[in-house]
Each structure stands twice: as structure tokens, then as C-alpha cells.
Image 1 (cartoon, rainbow, N blue to C red):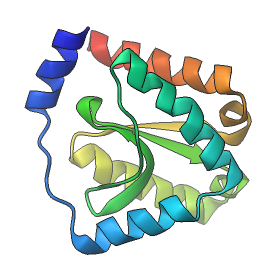
Image 2 (cartoon, rainbow, N blue to C red; image 1 turned 45 degrees about the vertical axis):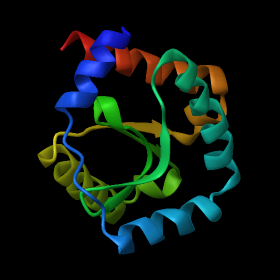
Image 3 (cartoon, rainbow, N blue to C red; image 1 turned 135 degrees about the vertical axis):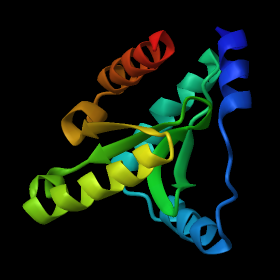
Image 4 (cartoon, one colour; image 1 turned 180 degrees about the horizontal axis):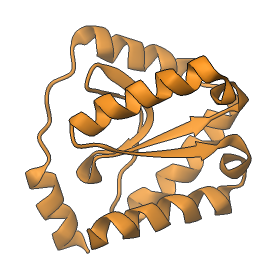
Length: 133
């Protein structure tokens, strides 16, 4: 698995984010809500499995909640506001922009994200699926 990860790291381009994007990501990390903080503590466990997770990571001029750069996997925690039509449209546009850069988007509802076990299971399943492709 580590060899696969090394190969993925080499093949993933890393365009440099702008200082504006980096500043925004820093601000978002500092003002993370309780659920994002708990999700971060949970997702950090993936580092021991060889998948370092970044939080509030700039990608393609956007900032994603969490990212596994080696897999180009963006993980978004979606609260109830994401059920509103205009927010769905915004999410679809963001997803399209990220996909154009080669990123996969995993959207996780807050109920799933509240449970560390469920959150890890969903993300691990997606990692496994991406490795099979």
C-alpha cells in the first residue's frame, strides 16, 4: 500500500496556492466549528495508515474542508444548509471545478460526521474504491 501511495504522490501535480488562499485556509482552521474540530481529530488517525489528511486545504482557488493530497480526495462535511437549492448549485459548481483539476469529492452529512466510527468507515471505503480504479 505504501508503494501505491508513493506512486500516487509522484503523479499528483501540486500547483502552488496563492497567499490569499493560504490566508483564507488559515483563518478557516482557526475558526473551525465543533463538528469540524471533532472530524479533524478523527481523520488525523488516517495518518497512521499512510494517508495524511490536511484540513481547510486550498485546492484550485477553493478551500476544501479536508484533503488527502496523495489521492486527490477532497472531503466536505455538509450541514443542513447544503440542502438549500442555491447552496446545492454552488456545491455542484465547486465539485465541477475540483473535478476539472483531477480531484474526487466525498460529501459527508453531519450526522455521519458526528460518529468517529462512521466517518472513518466512509472515508476508508472511498480510499479503497479509489485505489481499485
